[in-house]
Amino acid sequence: MNKVSKPWGGRFTEPTDAFVEAFTASVSFDQRLYRHDIEGSKAHARMLAHVGVISVDECDKIIMGLDQIQEEIETGHFNWSVALEDVHMNIEARLTELIGDTGKKLHTGRSRNDQVATDIRLYLREEIDTLGAELVRLMHGLLDQAERYAATIMPGFTHLQVAQPITFGHHLLAWYEMLERDRQRLMECRTRVNVMPLGSAALAGTSYPIDRAYTAELLGFAGPTQNSLDSVSDRDFAIELNAAGALMMTHLSRMAEELVLWTTSQFAFISLPDRYCTGSSIMPQKKNPDVPELVRGKTGRVHGNLIALLTLMKSQPLAYNKDNQEDKEPLFDTVDTLSGSLRAFADMIPAIEANEHTMYAAAKQGFSTATDLADYLVRHGLPFRDAHEVVGQAVRYAADKHCDLADLSLTELQDFSYHIQEDVFEVLTLEGSVAARNHIGGTAPQQVRAQIIKKRAELEAL
Ligand code: ARG
Image 1 (cartoon, rainbow, N blue to C red):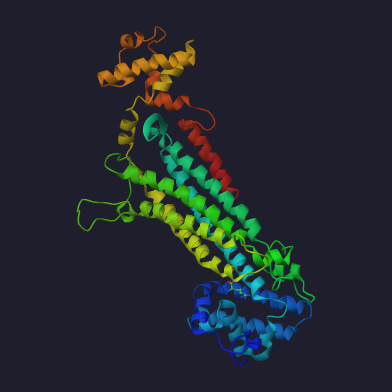
Image 2 (image 1 turned 180 degrees about the horizontal axis):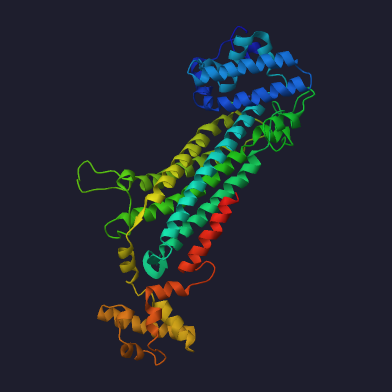
Protein backbone atom coordinates (compact mmCIF):
# COMPACT_ATOMS: atom_id res chain seq x y z
CA MET A 1 0.00 0.00 0.00
CA ASN A 2 1.40 3.39 0.95
CA LYS A 3 3.30 4.77 3.87
CA VAL A 4 0.24 5.25 6.08
CA SER A 5 -1.30 1.88 5.09
CA LYS A 6 -4.79 3.12 4.28
CA PRO A 7 -6.57 2.33 1.03
CA TRP A 8 -6.99 6.11 0.69
CA GLY A 9 -3.58 7.07 2.15
CA GLY A 10 -1.88 8.34 -1.03
CA ARG A 11 -2.14 12.08 -0.32
CA PHE A 12 -1.49 11.78 3.42
CA THR A 13 1.83 12.58 5.02
CA GLU A 14 1.21 11.38 8.56
CA PRO A 15 -0.72 8.46 9.99
CA THR A 16 -4.20 8.96 11.42
CA ASP A 17 -4.30 9.88 15.08
CA ALA A 18 -4.97 6.70 17.05
CA PHE A 19 -8.03 8.12 18.76
CA VAL A 20 -9.40 9.53 15.51
CA GLU A 21 -8.93 6.14 13.89
CA ALA A 22 -11.06 4.49 16.56
CA PHE A 23 -13.52 7.38 16.67
CA THR A 24 -14.22 7.32 12.95
CA ALA A 25 -14.28 3.55 12.50
CA SER A 26 -17.58 1.78 11.99
CA VAL A 27 -16.35 -1.78 11.57
CA SER A 28 -17.43 -2.83 15.06
CA PHE A 29 -21.06 -2.47 13.99
CA ASP A 30 -21.18 -2.35 10.19
CA GLN A 31 -19.53 -5.78 9.87
CA ARG A 32 -23.10 -6.94 10.27
CA LEU A 33 -23.55 -5.92 6.62
CA TYR A 34 -20.85 -8.31 5.36
CA ARG A 35 -23.20 -10.60 3.43
CA HIS A 36 -24.88 -7.73 1.65
CA ASP A 37 -21.54 -6.05 1.00
CA ILE A 38 -20.22 -9.23 -0.63
CA GLU A 39 -23.42 -9.73 -2.60
CA GLY A 40 -23.20 -6.16 -3.91
CA SER A 41 -19.51 -6.55 -4.77
CA LYS A 42 -20.12 -9.75 -6.71
CA ALA A 43 -22.87 -8.10 -8.76
CA HIS A 44 -20.64 -5.08 -9.37
CA ALA A 45 -17.76 -7.34 -10.56
CA ARG A 46 -20.12 -9.25 -12.88
CA MET A 47 -21.38 -5.99 -14.33
CA LEU A 48 -17.79 -4.74 -14.85
CA ALA A 49 -17.01 -7.97 -16.75
CA HIS A 50 -20.30 -7.72 -18.68
CA VAL A 51 -19.35 -4.29 -20.04
CA GLY A 52 -15.69 -5.26 -20.56
CA VAL A 53 -14.09 -3.03 -17.90
CA ILE A 54 -12.53 -6.14 -16.33
CA SER A 55 -12.03 -9.55 -17.92
CA VAL A 56 -14.22 -12.59 -17.20
CA ASP A 57 -11.14 -14.23 -15.66
CA GLU A 58 -10.64 -11.32 -13.32
CA CYS A 59 -14.30 -11.38 -12.39
CA ASP A 60 -14.11 -15.11 -11.60
CA LYS A 61 -11.08 -14.53 -9.38
CA ILE A 62 -12.84 -11.72 -7.54
CA ILE A 63 -15.91 -13.87 -6.97
CA MET A 64 -13.84 -16.80 -5.73
CA GLY A 65 -12.00 -14.49 -3.36
CA LEU A 66 -15.23 -12.96 -2.06
CA ASP A 67 -16.69 -16.44 -1.50
CA GLN A 68 -13.64 -17.38 0.52
CA ILE A 69 -13.94 -14.19 2.58
CA GLN A 70 -17.58 -14.96 3.33
CA GLU A 71 -16.53 -18.42 4.48
CA GLU A 72 -13.80 -16.93 6.68
CA ILE A 73 -16.25 -14.50 8.26
CA GLU A 74 -18.89 -17.15 8.87
CA THR A 75 -16.44 -19.58 10.44
CA GLY A 76 -14.94 -16.88 12.66
CA HIS A 77 -11.59 -16.82 10.86
CA PHE A 78 -11.76 -13.29 9.54
CA ASN A 79 -9.54 -10.71 11.16
CA TRP A 80 -11.53 -7.48 11.43
CA SER A 81 -9.26 -4.45 11.64
CA VAL A 82 -10.22 -1.07 13.09
CA ALA A 83 -7.38 0.47 11.08
CA LEU A 84 -9.33 -0.51 7.96
CA GLU A 85 -12.24 1.54 9.27
CA ASP A 86 -15.33 -0.21 7.94
CA VAL A 87 -16.74 -3.45 6.55
CA HIS A 88 -16.11 -2.31 2.98
CA MET A 89 -12.38 -1.66 3.31
CA ASN A 90 -11.84 -4.70 5.49
CA ILE A 91 -13.29 -6.97 2.84
CA GLU A 92 -11.54 -5.21 -0.04
CA ALA A 93 -8.16 -5.32 1.68
CA ARG A 94 -8.54 -9.03 2.39
CA LEU A 95 -9.55 -9.63 -1.23
CA THR A 96 -6.32 -8.09 -2.44
CA GLU A 97 -4.40 -10.13 0.11
CA LEU A 98 -6.03 -13.28 -1.25
CA ILE A 99 -6.02 -12.73 -5.04
CA GLY A 100 -3.39 -10.05 -5.51
CA ASP A 101 -3.66 -7.03 -7.80
CA THR A 102 -6.94 -8.19 -9.39
CA GLY A 103 -8.57 -7.47 -6.03
CA LYS A 104 -7.68 -3.81 -6.49
CA LYS A 105 -9.85 -3.67 -9.60
CA LEU A 106 -13.11 -4.36 -7.73
CA HIS A 107 -13.49 -0.74 -6.68
CA THR A 108 -13.43 0.48 -10.32
CA GLY A 109 -16.38 2.80 -10.97
CA ARG A 110 -17.59 2.53 -7.40
CA SER A 111 -17.25 4.39 -4.12
CA ARG A 112 -17.97 3.43 -0.55
CA ASN A 113 -20.73 6.02 -0.75
CA ASP A 114 -22.85 4.13 -3.25
CA GLN A 115 -21.62 0.84 -1.83
CA VAL A 116 -22.88 1.50 1.69
CA ALA A 117 -26.19 2.89 0.43
CA THR A 118 -26.64 -0.34 -1.55
CA ASP A 119 -25.65 -2.55 1.39
CA ILE A 120 -28.21 -0.94 3.69
CA ARG A 121 -30.94 -1.32 1.11
CA LEU A 122 -30.12 -5.00 0.57
CA TYR A 123 -30.05 -5.52 4.32
CA LEU A 124 -33.34 -3.71 4.93
CA ARG A 125 -35.14 -5.45 2.10
CA GLU A 126 -34.27 -8.80 3.66
CA GLU A 127 -35.21 -7.67 7.16
CA ILE A 128 -38.53 -6.22 5.96
CA ASP A 129 -39.44 -9.61 4.51
CA THR A 130 -38.53 -11.38 7.75
CA LEU A 131 -40.41 -8.84 9.87
CA GLY A 132 -43.40 -9.08 7.52
CA ALA A 133 -43.51 -12.86 7.90
CA GLU A 134 -43.37 -12.61 11.70
CA LEU A 135 -46.13 -10.02 11.64
CA VAL A 136 -48.30 -12.34 9.57
CA ARG A 137 -47.66 -15.15 12.06
CA LEU A 138 -48.88 -12.87 14.85
CA MET A 139 -51.92 -11.90 12.77
CA HIS A 140 -52.81 -15.55 12.22
CA GLY A 141 -52.60 -16.08 15.99
CA LEU A 142 -55.00 -13.19 16.56
CA LEU A 143 -57.48 -14.63 14.07
CA ASP A 144 -57.38 -18.04 15.75
CA GLN A 145 -58.00 -16.50 19.16
CA ALA A 146 -60.73 -14.24 17.77
CA GLU A 147 -62.46 -17.31 16.38
CA ARG A 148 -62.18 -19.12 19.70
CA TYR A 149 -63.62 -16.12 21.56
CA ALA A 150 -66.00 -14.82 18.86
CA ALA A 151 -69.02 -14.93 21.20
CA THR A 152 -67.22 -14.34 24.50
CA ILE A 153 -68.69 -11.28 26.17
CA MET A 154 -66.50 -8.71 27.90
CA PRO A 155 -66.89 -5.07 28.80
CA GLY A 156 -65.79 -2.55 26.22
CA PHE A 157 -64.24 0.54 27.79
CA THR A 158 -64.12 4.25 27.21
CA HIS A 159 -62.09 6.31 29.68
CA LEU A 160 -61.15 2.90 31.09
CA GLN A 161 -64.68 2.70 32.50
CA VAL A 162 -67.13 0.00 31.47
CA ALA A 163 -69.03 1.40 28.49
CA GLN A 164 -70.84 -1.27 26.47
CA PRO A 165 -70.62 -5.03 26.18
CA ILE A 166 -68.46 -6.26 23.32
CA THR A 167 -67.11 -9.62 22.26
CA PHE A 168 -63.53 -10.55 23.04
CA GLY A 169 -63.22 -11.67 19.41
CA HIS A 170 -64.10 -8.14 18.32
CA HIS A 171 -61.45 -6.68 20.63
CA LEU A 172 -58.82 -9.03 19.22
CA LEU A 173 -59.83 -8.03 15.70
CA ALA A 174 -59.28 -4.38 16.64
CA TRP A 175 -55.66 -5.30 17.37
CA TYR A 176 -55.57 -7.13 14.06
CA GLU A 177 -56.63 -3.99 12.18
CA MET A 178 -53.78 -1.99 13.71
CA LEU A 179 -51.26 -4.64 12.72
CA GLU A 180 -52.68 -4.98 9.23
CA ARG A 181 -52.05 -1.27 8.64
CA ASP A 182 -48.54 -1.73 10.05
CA ARG A 183 -47.96 -4.55 7.59
CA GLN A 184 -49.12 -2.37 4.71
CA ARG A 185 -46.79 0.44 5.81
CA LEU A 186 -43.89 -2.00 5.97
CA MET A 187 -44.57 -3.25 2.46
CA GLU A 188 -45.03 0.24 1.03
CA CYS A 189 -41.70 1.18 2.54
CA ARG A 190 -40.18 -1.87 0.84
CA THR A 191 -40.98 -0.49 -2.61
CA ARG A 192 -38.88 2.61 -1.87
CA VAL A 193 -36.07 0.54 -0.30
CA ASN A 194 -35.90 -1.71 -3.33
CA VAL A 195 -34.03 0.58 -5.75
CA MET A 196 -30.30 0.45 -6.42
CA PRO A 197 -27.87 3.32 -5.74
CA LEU A 198 -24.81 1.41 -7.04
CA GLY A 199 -23.17 3.26 -9.94
CA SER A 200 -23.70 6.65 -8.32
CA ALA A 201 -20.07 6.28 -7.19
CA ALA A 202 -18.88 9.04 -4.84
CA LEU A 203 -21.62 11.50 -5.84
CA ALA A 204 -21.52 12.29 -9.56
CA GLY A 205 -21.60 8.89 -11.24
CA THR A 206 -18.62 7.37 -13.02
CA SER A 207 -16.80 7.74 -16.34
CA TYR A 208 -16.80 3.96 -16.99
CA PRO A 209 -19.41 2.53 -19.36
CA ILE A 210 -21.36 0.86 -16.55
CA ASP A 211 -24.70 -0.89 -16.98
CA ARG A 212 -26.72 -0.05 -13.88
CA ALA A 213 -29.86 -1.82 -15.03
CA TYR A 214 -27.82 -5.03 -15.32
CA THR A 215 -26.44 -4.73 -11.76
CA ALA A 216 -29.91 -3.89 -10.45
CA GLU A 217 -31.29 -7.01 -12.08
CA LEU A 218 -28.53 -9.19 -10.63
CA LEU A 219 -29.35 -7.88 -7.15
CA GLY A 220 -33.11 -8.22 -7.55
CA PHE A 221 -33.74 -4.48 -7.32
CA ALA A 222 -36.70 -2.97 -9.17
CA GLY A 223 -34.21 -0.75 -10.99
CA PRO A 224 -31.42 1.83 -10.55
CA THR A 225 -31.99 5.10 -8.68
CA GLN A 226 -32.31 8.17 -10.90
CA ASN A 227 -29.98 10.76 -9.35
CA SER A 228 -26.48 10.03 -8.12
CA LEU A 229 -26.36 12.91 -5.59
CA ASP A 230 -29.62 11.88 -3.97
CA SER A 231 -28.68 8.17 -4.05
CA VAL A 232 -25.55 8.50 -1.94
CA SER A 233 -26.95 10.99 0.52
CA ASP A 234 -30.55 10.39 1.50
CA ARG A 235 -31.50 7.84 4.12
CA ASP A 236 -35.22 8.59 3.99
CA PHE A 237 -35.96 4.93 3.25
CA ALA A 238 -34.36 3.96 6.58
CA ILE A 239 -36.23 6.73 8.39
CA GLU A 240 -39.43 5.48 6.80
CA LEU A 241 -38.81 1.94 8.00
CA ASN A 242 -38.16 3.31 11.47
CA ALA A 243 -41.34 5.39 11.34
CA ALA A 244 -43.37 2.35 10.34
CA GLY A 245 -41.62 0.47 13.15
CA ALA A 246 -42.37 3.24 15.65
CA LEU A 247 -46.08 2.95 14.88
CA MET A 248 -45.89 -0.83 15.08
CA MET A 249 -44.28 -0.61 18.52
CA THR A 250 -46.93 1.90 19.56
CA HIS A 251 -49.55 -0.66 18.61
CA LEU A 252 -47.75 -3.48 20.39
CA SER A 253 -47.44 -1.24 23.46
CA ARG A 254 -51.19 -0.68 23.47
CA MET A 255 -51.80 -4.42 23.26
CA ALA A 256 -49.16 -4.95 25.95
CA GLU A 257 -50.80 -2.43 28.26
CA GLU A 258 -54.15 -4.21 28.02
CA LEU A 259 -52.54 -7.60 28.59
CA VAL A 260 -50.82 -6.26 31.70
CA LEU A 261 -54.08 -4.80 33.01
CA TRP A 262 -56.07 -7.90 32.23
CA THR A 263 -53.69 -10.21 34.08
CA THR A 264 -54.00 -8.21 37.33
CA SER A 265 -56.13 -9.79 40.04
CA GLN A 266 -58.38 -6.70 39.88
CA PHE A 267 -59.30 -7.51 36.27
CA ALA A 268 -58.41 -11.21 35.99
CA PHE A 269 -59.75 -11.30 32.41
CA ILE A 270 -56.95 -13.49 31.07
CA SER A 271 -54.08 -15.61 32.16
CA LEU A 272 -50.69 -15.88 30.54
CA PRO A 273 -48.85 -19.20 30.74
CA ASP A 274 -46.02 -19.31 33.28
CA ARG A 275 -43.46 -19.55 30.50
CA TYR A 276 -44.15 -15.93 29.51
CA CYS A 277 -43.95 -14.60 33.07
CA THR A 278 -41.36 -14.30 35.81
CA GLY A 279 -41.49 -14.17 39.58
CA SER A 280 -40.30 -11.75 42.21
CA SER A 281 -37.15 -12.39 44.20
CA ILE A 282 -38.84 -11.16 47.38
CA MET A 283 -42.62 -11.67 46.98
CA PRO A 284 -43.28 -15.39 46.57
CA GLN A 285 -46.85 -14.89 45.32
CA LYS A 286 -45.90 -12.78 42.29
CA LYS A 287 -46.29 -13.77 38.67
CA ASN A 288 -45.31 -10.81 36.56
CA PRO A 289 -46.26 -10.28 32.89
CA ASP A 290 -42.68 -9.45 31.90
CA VAL A 291 -43.00 -10.09 28.20
CA PRO A 292 -45.76 -7.52 27.53
CA GLU A 293 -44.14 -5.09 29.97
CA LEU A 294 -40.81 -5.35 28.22
CA VAL A 295 -42.34 -4.86 24.79
CA ARG A 296 -44.17 -1.82 26.16
CA GLY A 297 -40.85 -0.50 27.45
CA LYS A 298 -38.92 -1.25 24.27
CA THR A 299 -41.26 1.05 22.36
CA GLY A 300 -39.16 3.94 23.67
CA ARG A 301 -36.06 2.67 21.88
CA VAL A 302 -37.70 2.58 18.49
CA HIS A 303 -39.26 6.01 18.98
CA GLY A 304 -35.86 7.31 20.07
CA ASN A 305 -34.16 5.76 17.05
CA LEU A 306 -36.64 7.51 14.79
CA ILE A 307 -35.76 10.89 16.28
CA ALA A 308 -32.06 10.04 16.02
CA LEU A 309 -32.37 9.24 12.31
CA LEU A 310 -34.52 12.26 11.52
CA THR A 311 -32.07 14.53 13.31
CA LEU A 312 -29.10 12.89 11.62
CA MET A 313 -30.60 13.67 8.22
CA LYS A 314 -31.86 17.15 9.06
CA SER A 315 -29.98 20.03 7.34
CA GLN A 316 -27.40 17.72 5.72
CA PRO A 317 -26.15 19.32 2.54
CA LEU A 318 -25.78 17.20 -0.59
CA ALA A 319 -24.17 14.80 -1.17
CA TYR A 320 -22.58 12.19 1.13
CA ASN A 321 -21.45 13.25 4.60
CA LYS A 322 -19.86 11.11 7.26
CA ASP A 323 -22.88 11.89 9.45
CA ASN A 324 -24.58 9.07 7.59
CA GLN A 325 -22.36 6.49 9.22
CA GLU A 326 -24.49 7.17 12.29
CA ASP A 327 -27.53 5.66 10.58
CA LYS A 328 -26.56 2.07 11.26
CA GLU A 329 -26.75 1.60 15.01
CA PRO A 330 -30.26 3.07 15.42
CA LEU A 331 -31.44 1.19 12.36
CA PHE A 332 -30.03 -2.15 13.53
CA ASP A 333 -31.44 -1.58 17.00
CA THR A 334 -34.87 -0.84 15.54
CA VAL A 335 -34.81 -3.99 13.41
CA ASP A 336 -33.68 -6.11 16.36
CA THR A 337 -36.28 -4.62 18.69
CA LEU A 338 -39.08 -5.12 16.18
CA SER A 339 -38.00 -8.64 15.44
CA GLY A 340 -37.82 -9.63 19.12
CA SER A 341 -41.08 -7.92 20.04
CA LEU A 342 -43.00 -9.44 17.13
CA ARG A 343 -41.63 -12.86 17.91
CA ALA A 344 -42.58 -12.56 21.58
CA PHE A 345 -46.13 -11.54 20.66
CA ALA A 346 -46.52 -14.12 17.91
CA ASP A 347 -45.50 -16.84 20.40
CA MET A 348 -47.54 -15.48 23.31
CA ILE A 349 -50.90 -14.50 21.78
CA PRO A 350 -52.00 -18.08 20.94
CA ALA A 351 -51.24 -19.08 24.54
CA ILE A 352 -53.59 -16.56 26.16
CA GLU A 353 -56.50 -18.09 28.06
CA ALA A 354 -59.57 -15.93 28.65
CA ASN A 355 -61.41 -16.11 31.95
CA GLU A 356 -64.85 -15.91 30.35
CA HIS A 357 -66.86 -15.80 33.60
CA THR A 358 -64.94 -12.84 34.97
CA MET A 359 -65.23 -10.99 31.69
CA TYR A 360 -68.97 -11.62 31.62
CA ALA A 361 -69.47 -10.49 35.22
CA ALA A 362 -67.47 -7.31 34.55
CA ALA A 363 -69.57 -6.54 31.49
CA LYS A 364 -72.72 -6.71 33.63
CA GLN A 365 -71.44 -3.87 35.74
CA GLY A 366 -71.52 -0.19 34.96
CA PHE A 367 -74.97 -0.27 33.27
CA SER A 368 -73.35 -1.36 30.04
CA THR A 369 -76.70 -1.95 28.32
CA ALA A 370 -78.08 1.54 29.08
CA THR A 371 -77.58 2.56 25.44
CA ASP A 372 -79.55 -0.51 24.39
CA LEU A 373 -82.47 0.64 26.54
CA ALA A 374 -82.30 4.10 24.95
CA ASP A 375 -82.25 2.51 21.45
CA TYR A 376 -85.27 0.39 22.48
CA LEU A 377 -87.21 3.54 23.45
CA VAL A 378 -86.24 5.18 20.15
CA ARG A 379 -87.66 2.18 18.31
CA HIS A 380 -90.88 2.79 20.25
CA GLY A 381 -91.12 6.38 19.02
CA LEU A 382 -89.11 8.51 21.48
CA PRO A 383 -86.56 10.97 20.09
CA PHE A 384 -83.05 9.83 21.09
CA ARG A 385 -82.35 12.78 23.40
CA ASP A 386 -85.56 12.11 25.38
CA ALA A 387 -84.74 8.41 25.52
CA HIS A 388 -81.27 9.31 26.82
CA GLU A 389 -82.85 11.37 29.62
CA VAL A 390 -85.33 8.61 30.60
CA VAL A 391 -82.59 5.97 30.74
CA GLY A 392 -80.40 8.32 32.76
CA GLN A 393 -83.15 8.47 35.40
CA ALA A 394 -83.55 4.68 35.37
CA VAL A 395 -79.75 4.30 35.80
CA ARG A 396 -79.75 6.63 38.81
CA TYR A 397 -82.63 4.65 40.33
CA ALA A 398 -80.84 1.32 39.80
CA ALA A 399 -77.57 2.76 41.10
CA ASP A 400 -79.35 3.82 44.31
CA LYS A 401 -80.72 0.28 44.60
CA HIS A 402 -77.24 -1.16 43.87
CA CYS A 403 -78.54 -3.30 41.04
CA ASP A 404 -78.33 -3.53 37.26
CA LEU A 405 -81.00 -2.27 34.86
CA ALA A 406 -81.85 -5.87 33.98
CA ASP A 407 -82.54 -6.55 37.69
CA LEU A 408 -85.38 -3.98 37.84
CA SER A 409 -88.92 -5.30 37.52
CA LEU A 410 -91.10 -4.44 34.55
CA THR A 411 -93.32 -2.21 36.72
CA GLU A 412 -90.29 -0.37 38.06
CA LEU A 413 -89.06 0.21 34.52
CA GLN A 414 -92.49 1.30 33.32
CA ASP A 415 -92.41 4.12 35.89
CA PHE A 416 -89.82 5.73 33.63
CA SER A 417 -91.66 5.18 30.36
CA TYR A 418 -94.96 3.56 29.44
CA HIS A 419 -93.28 2.43 26.17
CA ILE A 420 -91.39 -0.24 28.06
CA GLN A 421 -92.82 -3.77 27.61
CA GLU A 422 -91.87 -7.32 28.60
CA ASP A 423 -89.57 -7.62 25.53
CA VAL A 424 -87.25 -4.98 27.03
CA PHE A 425 -85.35 -7.71 28.85
CA GLU A 426 -84.11 -9.08 25.52
CA VAL A 427 -82.17 -5.88 24.90
CA LEU A 428 -81.04 -5.51 28.48
CA THR A 429 -79.13 -8.80 28.34
CA LEU A 430 -75.48 -8.74 27.30
CA GLU A 431 -76.09 -11.37 24.61
CA GLY A 432 -78.91 -9.32 23.12
CA SER A 433 -76.80 -6.18 23.23
CA VAL A 434 -73.85 -7.61 21.29
CA ALA A 435 -76.00 -9.61 18.85
CA ALA A 436 -77.87 -6.44 17.92
CA ARG A 437 -74.71 -4.73 16.66
CA ASN A 438 -74.77 -6.80 13.54
CA HIS A 439 -73.34 -4.62 10.77
CA ILE A 440 -69.89 -4.28 9.19
CA GLY A 441 -67.52 -3.29 11.98
CA GLY A 442 -70.01 -4.17 14.74
CA THR A 443 -69.28 -6.40 17.73
CA ALA A 444 -71.87 -9.15 17.05
CA PRO A 445 -70.40 -12.68 17.04
CA GLN A 446 -71.79 -13.14 13.53
CA GLN A 447 -69.79 -10.13 12.31
CA VAL A 448 -66.66 -11.30 14.09
CA ARG A 449 -66.89 -14.66 12.35
CA ALA A 450 -67.49 -13.05 8.97
CA GLN A 451 -64.45 -10.80 9.47
CA ILE A 452 -62.26 -13.77 10.36
CA ILE A 453 -63.19 -15.56 7.13
CA LYS A 454 -62.45 -12.41 5.11
CA LYS A 455 -59.12 -11.77 6.83
CA ARG A 456 -57.97 -15.39 6.54
CA ALA A 457 -58.58 -15.16 2.78
CA GLU A 458 -56.63 -11.88 2.62
CA LEU A 459 -53.66 -13.44 4.43
CA GLU A 460 -53.75 -16.48 2.15
CA ALA A 461 -53.65 -14.21 -0.89
CA LEU A 462 -50.47 -12.37 0.22
N1 ARG B 1 -18.59 3.71 6.79
C1 ARG B 1 -19.15 4.68 5.92
C2 ARG B 1 -20.64 4.89 6.18
O1 ARG B 1 -21.18 4.13 6.86
C3 ARG B 1 -18.99 4.22 4.51
C4 ARG B 1 -18.92 5.33 3.55
C5 ARG B 1 -17.71 6.11 3.80
N2 ARG B 1 -17.48 7.08 2.79
C6 ARG B 1 -16.62 8.09 2.96
N3 ARG B 1 -16.52 8.90 2.01
N4 ARG B 1 -15.91 8.21 4.06
O2 ARG B 1 -21.25 5.81 5.71
